[in-house]
Length: 369
Image (tube, rainbow, N blue to C red; front, side, top):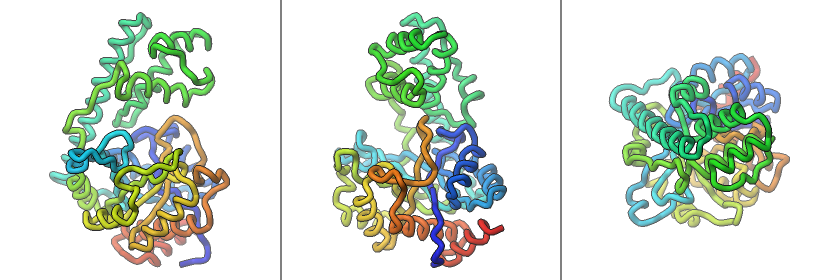
């Protein structure tokens, strides 16, 4: 490996799912400004942003990684009440794919399954939009939301509950001319005052989502079983698309707690390997440096490809350059090195090789063009 360790952000959502960014260009301009040279698109259920990501990375001499994310169901874990990497829903399992082929090679049955699960996700949000409009009528808000307009104006084809929260905030702002009137409207809709400041739009959207669109909220609609493919099916789709099935770790939460599955790291790693999953990732702001170093080092020593990212799948705009929960200055040198080695492996994989050295050559060539 080169002595030049590049900064990497291998997990970034874009407007092709939901994102803090207004555009791919904005995301990559920020990456270039912060000298993050390797960047991975990682949208839910979508490959649609790959062409734009590739083109805009080339224009900025950034190396693109092509990834995807699914929410799947581990049926045995659900039956046993085990939390995997969703802290609130036993059996629900987030899986990413790293280093997918571009241009896409996904065809036939696998392409149809990906399309179907995305359409079901969209339909579920459509049902929540209907219920939200019922609430707006009941509480005499004086306006309603248009699902079709939200899709047209706020999305690139995939709609999520965060889009509904954003659309609701925008509608309240248009309806109510002052901060006081807006906060009164939010209280009317949510049944309680918001904690957020009127100017903090990201926090307002998060509160609207939490109060109205999550479980227990007045506009919440539970997902149909068809919204969640089994873990082994998701793994198959990722492999058919040329990618590496990747397990996203939650690791330690703000209270230092772990999910049932992740608390015993050796057992967790052994289980993932038996499942044919040998790639792992972390969203670094969730974790302390000590735990992230412990988990990432162990997994890399066990033969896993390990990468880190920021997500950016909430309204809050954060830096592209990665940092941990207890170190706002950035990652330790050990973590930067692990992340770079992982990115080189992903780069090699998406070029059809398993040579980390080749992956580094490809990265270095791109950034020096």
